[in-house]
Image (tube, rainbow, N blue to C red; front, side, top):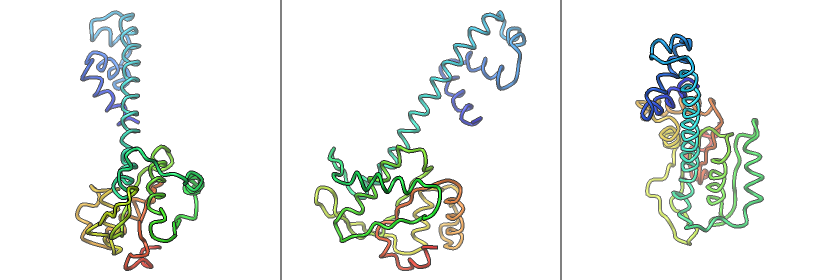
Length: 229
């Protein structure tokens, strides 16, 4: 909370230095209104009036930051739909609302099972359903972060085009690396070339907060039995 307020205060200072100083003196430094009036050469009444305006503008800055954070969160979740399913150009998936609602409710439960498998013949829409789930989850506060690693060599998009992925993730080490690059890139520096260390860090990261992770074409991973635990 303090870091968030500090960021908002820094943004307020760009547009209104006096109001930012008032809030810092009062709530950051713990100065009394009388002390602030003396320091800034204002009357007590002026300090009260300026403080009310400053609090309102700080609240507006926080609202803007929240709106930007929501947009970034949803864009991050939606990016997987574009990357792995293709740009639907305004044509949303049809006929999967019931499955999405059921799966999202199950995934949002704070307990086991931790793994759900979407199964079916090729081209039936498993990847499309997974991408739609991530997009919907981006509008929820339950999941803290999202990640997607694909072991697909190719996929069929919503326009009927076959997209080829030249470098699919096929090993436990590659999957761990792919997830860490998305979820904890700074912490992962220096560990991505060490499979055991990378896997250990991944366990730590995933246990901190709820994550929604998609592993597409899990059945093609070479050491899937080692990965599942």
